[in-house]
Image 1 (cartoon, rainbow, N blue to C red):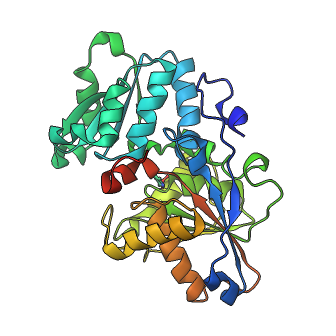
Image 2 (cartoon, rainbow, N blue to C red):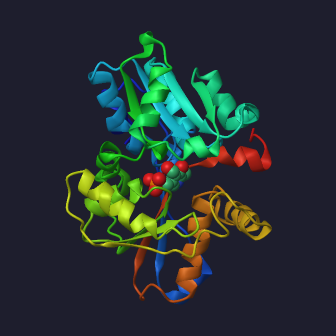
Length: 317
Ligand SMILES: Cc1ncc(COP(=O)(O)O)c(C=O)c1O
């Protein structure tokens, strides 16, 4: 798997196997369903989870298109920024991260890594950050860069674009799940790019996205746009469960953190507090509520993001 996904890019991921493990939860026994977890977090600690798949074709495009730098957007704890910074270092291409918030965030573990790996950070306030997809704003940012960094390959926030969707269509493959044939796939959603690719790749499976932000109805439209932007027709095999945000984006609670600790202790399943912890907690609630018929085989995708847990618990040795 690792060999396959890094082929031809010069990126050297740690050669850990990605596992598919069954979670023997009592709630699943009671409901008569199986719950399996695809541990995409195991691709690499630095370019973990969905990140490799979202970046793969973007990086290829940047390299083959003769671009001299990368530019992208993210919050101060962004997994995308973290992964992109490391990929850029490995590929030896300069990279600029436009970060929402104040420069005091620069010393947090995520941005410290990014800086150490050579990413240049530009902090913008919330008002400016809202303009992150506007061509005029992007042009202003690019105009401020030295000529030696141009042309600039621009990756949108969260890395979600048509090439990311194409990459995410490779998440469920023989290399990752082999002959396993789930009836349902469940995954956390931020921008919906990962869900778009997964849903497109397997129209025969019901895909359930769990947005980690409040009032995420807009994602229905965003996902349809991502799918059509990738030149595909909506397979209509996906839906969103809007109740799994647990207070909103990046909001945590003692209950959520306790759940995360319990999953790690009892099932050796490390989760993060922004994406995968919320997805698993909501998924178990759905199992308890009888959302899945007896005999269902549910595949939860662990989309990574564990680097973000350093902010909660400090670095792991
Ligand atoms: C760990 C993790 N899981 C899930 C997601 C959500 O992915 P998407 O934005 O493609 O919905 C993200 C953000 O990219 C993430 O960092």
